[in-house]
Amino acid sequence: SPAFEWQDPLNSKALLTEEELAISETAERYCQERMLPRVLQAYRDENYDAAILSEMGELGLLGANLEGYGCAGVSTVASGLITRAVERVDSGYRSGMSVQSSLVMGGIHTFGTAEQKDKFLPGMAKGKLLGAFGLTEPNHGSDPGSMETTARPHPSKKGYLLLSGAKTWITNSPIADVFMIWAKLQETGKIKGFLVERKDCPPGTLETPAIKNKNGLRASITGMIQLDDCPVPEANMFPDVEGLTGPFTCLNSARYGIAFGTMGALEDCIERARTYALERKQFKNNPIAKYQLVQKKLADAVTDAAFGTLAAIQVGRLKDEGKATPEMISMIKRQNCDRALVHARTLQEVFGGNAVSDEYGIGRHVANLFVTQTYEGQSDIHSLILGRAITGLQAFV
Ligand code: TGC
Ligand code: FAD
Image (cartoon, rainbow, N blue to C red):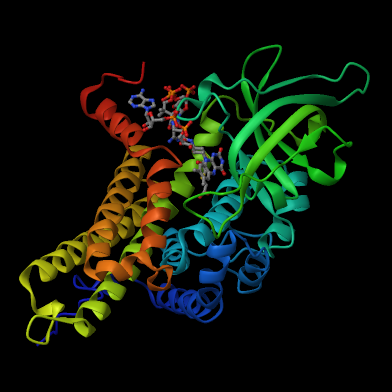
């Protein structure tokens, strides 16, 4: 008779293809053997090792669900399994990868011209060319439609525009080679996407200072993008998409990755808490895992990890069949980030005072998971997206 497996209680593996299982195994092995040994020191030093992206590129793990241009062309579920493997180690490492793969490569793949795809995608797939995605501004986070960054015609150079404005809280910005900037055309007020190459920016027109002293996501690098009449050729603009549909289409894919990825962080919290609870003894030499209140914490967390994983697989399958809606993605992004954060916080209690030591890893996940609940649409914003779809009434303004 089948045995209950606490690591995969609803047997989600049974829903995966042979290829997906193999990809998951490759990603898990790389993450456990190569990423995990670096993360504690990286987090302490607030240092992102960009070599991670080139290592992932060599394994074919970047932009993995895209077709062509050196990308693997795997299923959406397989790409989710990769994010889960990475986020089992650290949400910051998954962040660096999500921006590269889903937001920037995905955006170029969907909206880029043939020349833009040829120019950027092969280098990005190898992790040799690094990307950043600039949507959020100092005064406009949840409401990017009010952005102030503008693009105006270059007064003297034909075929060029000048970008001005500031983007903030931008993952990878201090180390990126190419920036996907969302800005309003000064003439029409329409939002357009631009690919800005660091190497082509004259001095003083592009600055990307790092934002230091973060109390979460410290193993990733975050910064600003400051544009001061930065010249960009018209050929680097996405020709056929305008309005928020552009950035939000990129976000659909990245939000999916976060929904699957956070299940990896939660599973790591469960595994660490279970191990600790079985080893730690209190009251008549009993392992604390024997006590009902500790068991309930584990049961609650294991249940939500299993449900969240099944939901992510279902939405991935629908996405590949062209049947997924943005609201489905909002639902799993909100639910999985919220549940992962709640359970990580509760499981932290299992470690008693030791939870305060960074050696136990649980505090790092708690701090990181707060960020996952905040970026790519804060959870309350996703509640309002769902509320709008349920009632037909919009509550944003
Ligand atoms: P709204 O009127 O709802 O929509 C404007 C236009 O956009 C279209 N649209 C979508 N298209 C594709 N996919 C989606 N998910 C879409 N959602 C909306 C919509 O059809 C409409 O098109 P059109 O042709 O009619 O113009 O826009 P709104 O201004 O009312 O905005 C509403 C709201 C709150 C939902 C939206 O602004 C929102 O989602 N806010 C959250 C902002 C956000 O997610 N920012 C993410 C920044 S990037 C980031 O955080 C990266 S972190 C990366 C990492 O490190 O991992
Ligand atoms: P605000 O929009 O000011 O929201 C503050 C609070 O108010 C939230 O709780 C929100 O839910 C609530 N709120 C706002 N409006 C409403 C409303 N109408 N009804 C109810 N509640 C509301 N952005 C990028 O473009 N690219 C990146 O690579 C990127 N990386 C990031 C990395 C990190 C580490 C962090 C922290 C952020 C990153 N972001 C990035 C930005 C992120 O997407 C924003 O922080 C997020 O969208 C929220 O915007 P905000 O911080 O301006 O908060």
